[in-house]
Amino acid sequence: MKNKKYLLFDLDGTVADSAPGVIGGAKYALERLGYPLPDESLFPCFLGPPLKYSFMTYAGVSEEKVEEAIAVYREFYRETGVYMCSLYEGAADFLKKARAAGKVMLIASSKPEAFVHTVLSHLGVAEYFDHVSAASFSDAHLSKRDIVARAMAMAGASKDDCVMIGDRIYDVEGAADNGIPCVGIVNGSVFKKELTECGAYAVAEDFFELVNILL
Image 1 (cartoon, rainbow, N blue to C red):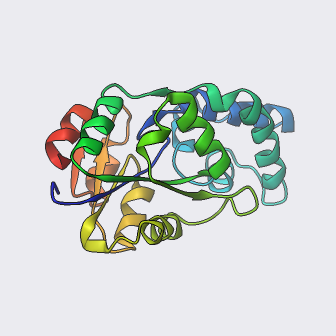
Image 2: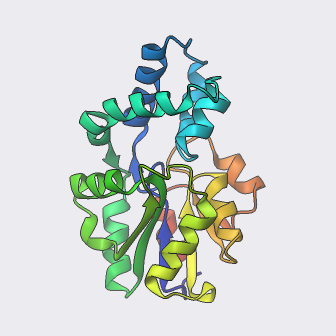
């Protein structure tokens, strides 16, 4: 993996601990719409997939109400939730080392692009990423396969030169759909088994271990 020039990163749960804002927004939307809150253990599952899938799968929001739930979520997230995030330990050092090693780094995220840019700027790491491939507010259900494909196209990268780094099965599958490997990163989450079982090339506990795999 150390010969891969292009490093494609998921954002939430991978580079940024966005859980407080994402989970806070989900709870806000469900309470506003009168839905009962699901078991607390299900809220981490909102990190990764598109919101439509999460609201319908983990909170029982109906097809008729899911767009309203997303709109209410974004009310909270735009003003408050987007800033409720932090860099994972070791992330900044990894990005500096990767840039010094000549790596080209990209974001491939299901998050709306405007929010991605806000998070990267808020965390002070926007300068390390050459391209951002993400969803839009009008197409928030874009598949990870398409997001990864667009990131590769933005960089003019061949599949032989790319590796995806992510924290969920969606990252592994989106990478595989484009013929590239995915290295999972746990960052203290509960998804290590998921990453191992879905075919990640390797699974790093944190950014310090990721250095040994990719740099």
